[in-house]
Image 1 (tube, rainbow, N blue to C red):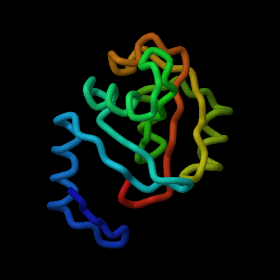
Image 2 (image 1 turned 90 degrees about the horizontal axis):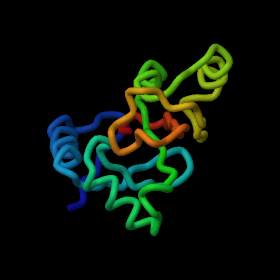
Image 3 (image 1 turned 60 degrees about the vertical axis):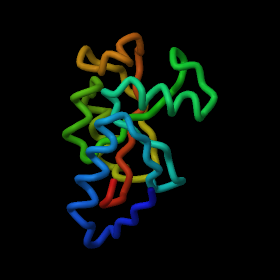
Length: 126
């Protein structure tokens, strides 16, 4: 299925359809600041495993980034001190992945990770 969304005026019904697909374990390809990326719901085991398989990575060692909509979401998954906050505030949204220590609220699939990569692309659709 191919769904085209326009960043200036995305179709809300299509966004809901994509969200439903992600929650059920589906995979999407989305634009970021640098490349198109595979994406899934980080709480869905099947989706995360499928992306690791597509990328030919062992799930236990795969370095997958979390995409957040805004800076306030980062603390849901990572520990952020003042220095990290300032770095992110000055550089995101943008084409960077910031590696931070994971916190105790990481999704079950990522509990064994000491660090987590955080992306906040400068793309309204994401």
